[in-house]
Length: 361
Ligand code: SAM
Ligand code: SF4
Image 1 (cartoon, rainbow, N blue to C red):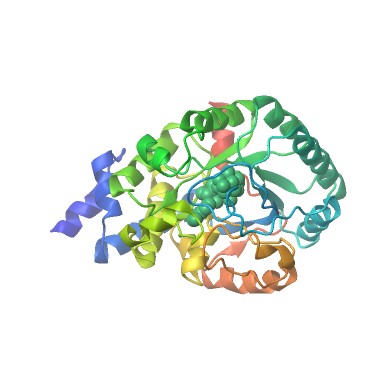
Image 2: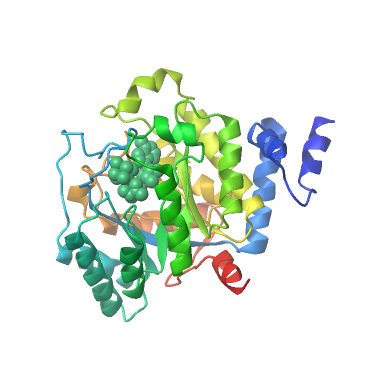
C-alpha cells in the first residue's frame, strides 16, 4: 500500500518539498525504486555516457578559513604548495593526450592580481597546447566579476562554486563571520550572467543539517536554474573546528546513502543537467563514484594532480588515490566505468544540455 503511494509520487509533474523529504527518507523497496527511476531518467535525457574532467588540485594555499576544510588557512599542519606553470601545463597535456575532453583547475581561494594574471595566462596556454580542444572548468572560489570575465574571455567555460548549504543559519555555523552567504550567491549569479556553464553543490551530512535542509538545497538548485552540480558527503577532518561535533554526525554509511539519494532526486528534478559523482563518495566506499553513476551522475573527475602533492590537498580524512600517479588512473577508471554499465565519452566535452536550453529561453 505504502509502495503504491510512493510510486505515485513519480507521476506528479512537480514534486513539492514534502514529496522530496519523503523520497529522501525512502528505505528498502522505495529506495531502490527511487534509484531505478533516476537511472531511467538519466538514460532517457542524457544517455549512458560518463564524461571525464581531469582534476588538477594546483594549490592548497587558501585565504579562507571554512570550519570544515582541512586546507583552511589556520591549519598550520599543512605543507603548502603551488604547482609550477609547467607542472600545470603538463597535467593539461596529459588530459589532452589521454582524451579526457576537459580539465578542472581547482585550488584554495586567492584573490590577488598575481593569481588572476597567472590563471589567465595558463588558460590561454592550455587552449593553445590542445588546439582549443580541451574544455576548461575553474573551481577557485569567490572572485570579482571582472576577474571571472577575464578568465571567461581567456577560455574557461565552466565554473564550480558550491553554495555548501542553502540554510543561512547553518552556513553561519560552518564558516567564520567574514564569510558571506550573500557574496557566494552574488558570485554564482555573476558566473551565470557572464555566460559560464555554472555549477554549484552542497555537502551532505554536515553537523546540524537536517533532511529538510537537504530538500531545500535541491529546490534551490532548481530555482536558480543551475547547469551542473557536484555534491557529496561531508567528511570530518581532525584539524578543523567542526571536528568537535563528530559525535553528532550521521554515520559515514548514512551520509553516503543520503548522497546517493540526493543525486537520484536531483536527476529526477533537473533531468538534463550534468551531475558529478564526487570524490568524497569514493572516500567512503571504494566503488562510491560508480554507485553515483548508477543513480544519475554522468561526470567523473579523475585526479591528475602529480602524486607527490596529493597528500597535501587533504580536505577530509581518507581521501582516495593519494599515493597514485595520473597514469595509474586511466586503466583503473576504464574498468570501473564498464562495471557501472556506462561508456566513457572520450575526447568529448559532454557539456550540460541544460545550459544550452537555458541560453535559448
Ligand atoms: N576553494 C574553492 C572553494 O571553496 O570553492 C575550491 C576548492 S574547495 C576545497 C572545493 C570543495 O571542497 C568545497 O566547495 C567543499 O564543498 C569541499 N570540501 C571542503 N572540505 C570538505 C569536507 N571536510 N568534506 C567534504 N567536502 C569538503
Ligand atoms: Fe579554502 Fe575552499 Fe577549503 Fe574554504 S573550502 S577553506 S575556500 S579551499
